[in-house]
Amino acid sequence: MPPTVAVVGGGISGLAACYYLARGPRPPKVLLLEASARLGGWLQSTRTADGAVFEHGPRGIRPAGVVGTDTLHMVSELGLEGDVLPVPGDHPASRNRFLYTGGALHKLPSSLGGLLRPVPPFSRALLWSGVRDLLAPAGTQPDESVHAFVHRRFGQEVADIAVDSLCRGVFAGDCRVLSIRSCFPALFEAERRRRSVLLGLALGSGKERGAESGLSQRARAERWSQWSLRGGMESLAQALVAFLHPRGVELRCHAPLRRLHRHPDGRWKLTLADGTVMADHVVSALPAAALAEVLPAETEPLAQELRHIPAVSVAVVNLQYEGVVLPVTGFGHLVPSSEDASLLGIVYDSVAFPQHDGTGAASVRLTVMLGGAWFGQSFGDPVAVAPALLLQRAQVAVREQLGLEPAPTRSIVKVHQACIPQYTLGHWQRTGKRGPGPGGPPAPAEAPTAHPHPRRAHQPLPGRAAAAPQPHRGLLRRRLRQRLHRQCQSSCRAAAGAAALSPSVPASPPGTQQLHGSRTKCFFN
Ligand SMILES: Cc1cc2nc3c(=O)[nH]c(=O)nc-3n(C[C@H](O)[C@H](O)[C@H](O)COP(=O)(O)OP(=O)(O)OC[C@H]3O[C@@H](n4cnc5c(N)ncnc54)[C@H](O)[C@@H]3O)c2cc1C
Ligand SMILES: C=Cc1c2[nH]c(c1C)Cc1[nH]c(c(CCC(=O)O)c1C)Cc1[nH]c(c(C)c1CCC(=O)O)Cc1[nH]c(c(C)c1C=C)C2
Figure (cartoon, rainbow, N blue to C red):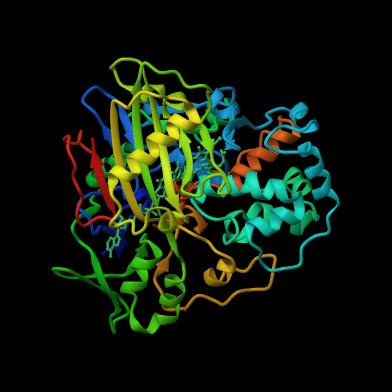
């Protein structure tokens, strides 16, 4: 009898865990338990009758690093190769980066020349920030806020404007409370290794590669900055379901785990709403807070740690305009908190993924991201906020920041409660992971495999192909950027790449609708 593995949580992490379990030579019996009515978690895409795709969660997956390579390998194995929509390195959505500050859009320098002279919104050439990093002494703290670290190494403007915005665009979070060690480990380690972040990134640490595929080789050759899928990101979850079903993986929705107990025979007893299940192993792909609620009493210290991992809420407003032209082309722009704390940034979806525009008239699709760490102060309780207020706020931002005057022809407002976990100062101590600084507490021995967030899950993968040689043919600048990308790897990639971690959304009817039993409130217009 093969052992039984219960995977709890049916987001991309749980589905990816099932995938790695099911494809091994002697697969265990796998059971996936998902609380809600659908699989995919934050992977949520709306496909309209005219073929347009609107993403309410992740919209692009970065191919760099081990997990990026592993994810592309998985995508190939799922038969999705023909559906991949890449954004190559020479595409405007890869090359052009914008910040909205002082009431105007500013393009960040994309060439060496741009670093040598002052480029607004920076008052000094960014070259000087680099020189500062090369000369500054190494830090001695076991952890620091992202802001304090960058301020110390690169100066105040880079911290206040560039890194403040970056943290909003990745974590929807505040760089003054996020941890450099946990959010950007490559930067932290680069400083520890070489005393300078730039030097440490440039000289690298000889990191391994993931499982290579034709797709990952193509991604490297074409320098993809990210990729999506023709049917939207949710089609990745659907393809995983289609892969798992015929392999005997039992996928159960409406099956919230209520309690986890260690049975006297050493197995796990999972209490569900309507009965119990026994398993030899449990893989948690739950959000930290949800895992804390189901852990057995004897692992209370772990539950306490998990409860201390906060998560912020984000309002995602998808807008479609017809007969308008964007003033700039790029992936989107970010807004530093000093400019407008409530508005994180705007993604120009139709620039990176015009294939998602549908067959209707030429249109511009945008996503306005609101709230994050500033949700409460800006909009109040995410459960109670009026969608009309969010829509209005998003429309005003598009008018002021991009100059698009007409009303959108289509809009969808979603409020995702506690959707992005925040690794705050000292988070490394919670994970008990020993790093370059003083060691943290060991994880409780009796706890199930628990990854409060898959981004930090670095488990060896069964059947990983041997690492191929690294193609170091780029300039220093490109290499630095690749490394920066790698260290702020998207959680989706990590989720899909980590072995033991964490439906077609039909065209929704017009009108206002709230999804019950989920952490998303959704409103269509
Ligand atoms: C607006 C937004 C934009 C994003 N953009 C990007 C991006 O562009 N690129 C990128 O890479 N990443 C992005 N992310 C991050 C990415 O979407 C997430 O990191 C990833 O989807 C998390 O997947 P997960 O499976 O770990 O967690 P989740 O998706 O949260 O899945 C957890 C699952 O567990 C279930 N669950 C909860 N409690 C229980 C219980 N007791 N029993 C059983 N099941 C339970 C939940 O219903 C859920 O389905 C974005 C996230 C958001 C919110
Ligand atoms: C967990 C939530 C995530 C969100 N985006 C990402 C994750 C993991 C992925 C991501 N987004 C950005 C980066 C930085 C590296 C880069 O390529 O620039 C990463 C790894 C930046 C970014 N995010 C948004 C925009 C407009 C940008 C700027 C990109 C650019 O100029 O090239 C949109 C956006 N995505 C998320 C949020 C909260 C957000 C807010 C505006 C979620």
